[in-house]
Image (cartoon, rainbow, N blue to C red; front, side, top):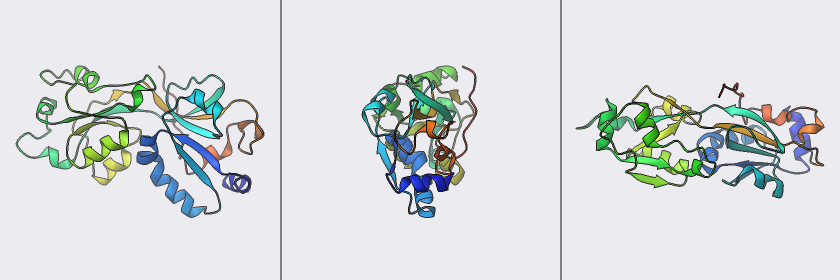
Length: 231
């Protein structure tokens, strides 16, 4: 699959449209590793929150979008299922108000990610607190950010508690930069999808040229795909 991508890539770079936070938190580490292994394969990352409809106006070969997978005029494949849960620096498990119980969230700054508002799939702190049965914590207070990556930076620095996307933070949890202090993971209102133009085009990356989903979507750059869950 990689060889076919490389041959086509000599003519034009593969353009991937992706939300900025996803690019920084999930795709970035895979991108640099993949680029090192395949230096002759040009890849262009277009970091944007524009909706999938805008892809018709841009020279985009593949997009990653957060939603339910229903994109008229496009073909989509589930990439990562999502769920949200509080995450924090290990330092916040100690001190005068350790995060050993959700009630202690009242003593910490809540960090909010507003980027999924544009897609209409926003899960809030208040949603998680209500699902966990937590009382006495104002789910609207704290700091608001328009980019998920900024939320994760502040969370890792120990300056607050973020509502982490489980689809993206696995490496942070494995490395110990972040910890998951509570068990409850609230199902996301969307998941991450690979999105392709459904119609045949003259581009070497067109899904229809192989009669199936693009072969390059199965390369290590995107990793193994997950299975859809009932909604």
